[in-house]
Image (spheres, helix red, strand yellow):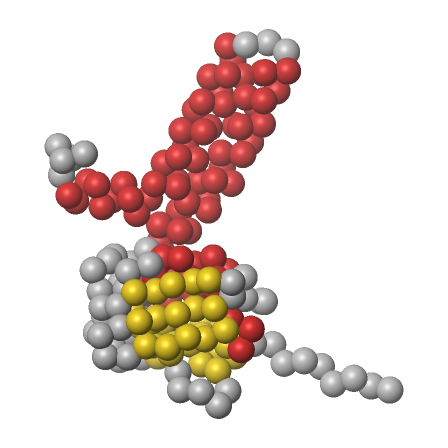
Length: 173
């Protein structure tokens, strides 16, 4: 793919899930309109699936904030690890009690807070940081659209709380 301009390639890589969703829809429509029987139903199923894929792809594309930043992010079995040139650490997702976005840092960072431990700062542009979308989307009660909107705004020097772990209700006996 050396003949494709780097800007075009980067744009495609940012939005590739949405593009694939569109292609699934076109392919499904082609199948639905050109064959009969059970295959036509498969085509219509793909047409119905396409908007879901497109919406998910657009959300993931909005989450990607570039690359080439400091450090590497790794997500494995509920643990987020960040290894950077000056800092790093590992947090268990089950122990994170607050997720914030700090636009005052250069580059902007995710701040993962857990009780009794220092905050883990993960640059939005770190290698592998796009894997955090699925991790953050799994947090109970997170509002994904609000997170994406705050990423779009990025107003330095503010730190914005994106999510707080819901407190457990005390048991009544």
